Length: 284
Image 1 (cartoon, rainbow, N blue to C red):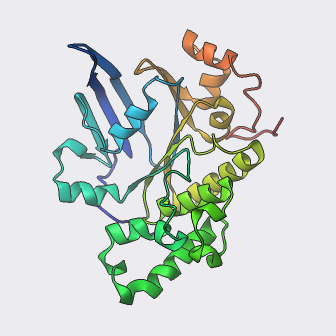
Image 2 (cartoon, one colour):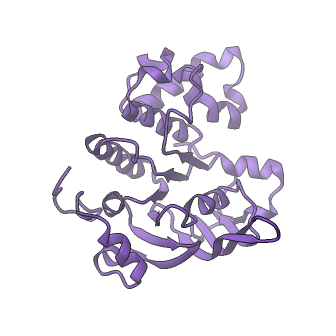
């Protein structure tokens, strides 16, 4: 894949969160601390899962690391670049290397847009050479390549989102995320709206794309079985704080924090999928 945007700095993690906090105003003079002093790193080519119950701070944290929210305190560095120190133009360039796949692919798509235009959005936004009528044939060719990379035929370009199943729409979302040749992809509950068999297919696709293109994933989920299958490391969030972080097998196999043990106890079969490091599928 051709890399777009600012050049990475050598010998640094892909993503660094240092003392990151975010407050929101509440009723009256109250304040809500949604993210509380989070320090994490994400290495080039790995998958870090963020897990926790609803309200644990996962969504706010992902918005901070994508530069969509400003932190109350702390820093976010992507490939060594402090997001707070970038000009708007530099931030736009850097964002080409950071993309997101959301939980509900249908709501994230304009129902009046054809697939070709949905997938092409990042290309047109970040690469001037894809703009204008003369660039249209080359744009369609590139969109066709992206669709084929996620297991969809080129001929679907002129169809609309409502004509696809949930799994197919998520594949379209993944193709769109890949369009700007990102290095980091945030996957926000990307399989939670899908049935188990389709979840498995999408997870296989994500793993294959990561191998092919050297992608780095931040995988947000409450489903520990899915996390067990795809993640290299896990960070457990509770009330905005990271209470446990480590290799997936260690955290899910022998959790140290009581909250992590509570999460695992609430899952009937946490080994419902084969793990990242191997082993057979025991269910689903």
